[in-house]
Length: 475
Figure 1: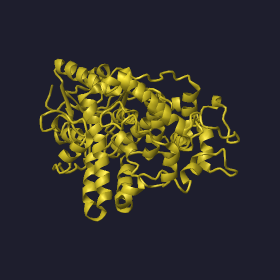
Figure 2: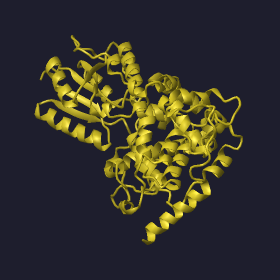
Figure 3: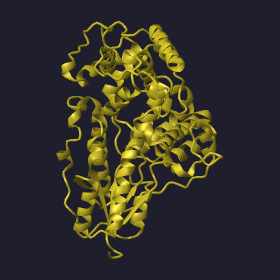
Figure 4: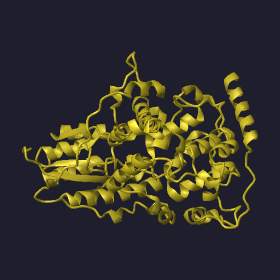
């Protein structure tokens, strides 16, 4: 290959131009750079809401590259086959990308790197999805962290490089290869009528993500520690999980912004930094123990008698936001309308499913994967196992969130419930009514329905969960 041969830059969950080590390295060579996005099995198997949101991010990245004198080439098919085709068509001598760490992507990328290297192609992965590469964070004995707090203490004061500026231009090839039309991929198709409801809630693209971070740091970070637990507060959190999921902003950019705010924002800024490291912890675990994705991380929990039947009426009620438990139902409905769910709500709905209903955490994990626009393979797996008690650094199974008292504590004024539940109000909010526009028509639900009695009451569910735990531990 010629030293001036093009570099194929394979975009995935790194859809930005700034603080992008692979893009910066490619542009620095002076060689032509051909940005590529591949709709392969990883993309195809992504849940409905996340796939729709990914498509929106791809469109934003294509526009950003166009402004730099470049293009985003879209192809559909097996990743290795597509890359080999593009190498033949363009004469590219290199394929570079940003690393991913979940087992499905790792297996794919390892196979691609091996095959392309055998072909004589410079196949190279770069950092950028995390603050710390998982193999660089070790305990004193040289192992990986299984508990969050010691990991936070380890990395808190580490010096990290400055963020990288976006390139002024992206060197273009003399001739561009053909590209698919993004509309032909129909990435929002599985959302059906819910797409029109969720889409306006999305904050898409690098520019929007950077502005979101700036607004949060300037106006909200100081009160973040207390406000992030109040689900009815409109801007209590940063909202950046959506943008981090698709790499529209880098964790490093967020990290530096948090540190710059430390002097004036104190505990609020430190809490934000801790949340970034919580995300790192999830990836640390998925890298070192990939079983966390689909098996109990604590293997002794394989013997727990989880309910695995998704056809149960209680499970269907949970999915529909019709459990009769207001905090659970409000949170589930928030997810169907906005594509996201407040973190306090995520803990409550997960606890209710795994403890009050004693259902396998994987039922909830799969449902979230289909419904969340900010779905993340590591955070979703760790979050569900944390709630179920089967994971690392988990809340013990016998610690059962009471969804009634939790609602009293964190939604005392009822703002959150009024925002998302319609049945008991004579004049429901627009957001609560939007739920009935988002859900499948065959659910046959209406805001005029009577709100249900609990499928499992809070106290009854707690007692049943503790009894099940005693049988498990003593059985």
